[in-house]
Length: 335
Image (cartoon, rainbow, N blue to C red; front, side, top):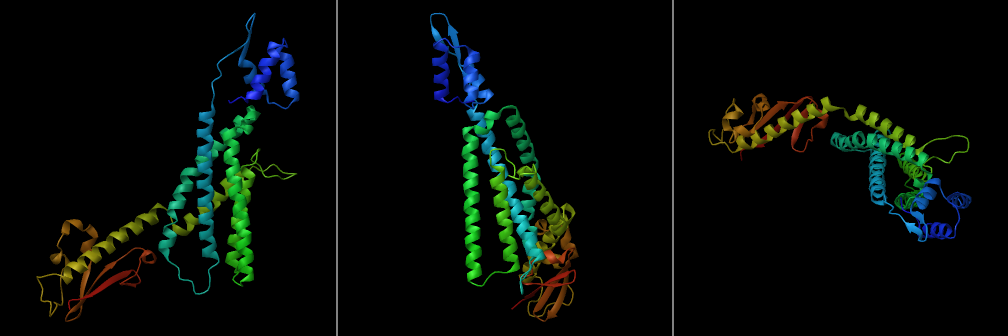
């Protein structure tokens, strides 16, 4: 660990003046230096007859501590940020605004935040436990430079967020734009900021008088709850595979529709009543096996549509598609 120059100088001068190590240790303890700092400072000097206090090499762990706390800072931010993102999504689901249009694609995008929590929550929990155990055995760890700087930055961000949240809340109230959803989201931001403030205090606990509640437990529990709710809402791997198969079907549908519209093997002025769309495929090797299920229908002499069955219609982004139950169709004109 890094020893402050003033501590090292004091130990050197005390030992050179003839004071014993026990006497120096007692003086430093009364000045509230930690045991680790005292031992490290004393081990940095050796008394030699006629040479006074001779310095010993002290290996610094500052780089290792900086790496650990920088990684802990980033991991904490990933857990807190993605937990808040999923919490906002749940609030949007349970507290919809009037005349709001819902899109399943927006929910499916939450899988990035879900994946982030699955990866970073265990890492955060392991790193927090390691930091707590290290701080319990070495109280000087709480006063490390890197730990204190990153904690100060995190607390500054949390305080600014709280003030900004309060400012926007008051502005919205004065402007008459406050809704229940807005209030709940504001409370969620405030609670997350309080978790950040509590975690980056010296002991990383909530300052409750009658209860010992580590902020890491609160953050981890919140992350697991919103992850479970989002998994129930969006679906897991089986749901994702179903949506992927539908994306392949829609991709084949669009490709074959463009191919039929440009097909030279049919009469463009008088479309046939029956047609296998695959005979018009310009790049059949780029199609998937789902292309064989695409059907053709003549709508008018120069109009046609291709249709296919899908497994999960809510995930289909309509645009120019017509979705009818589990059937998706795309219409084109030869003119």
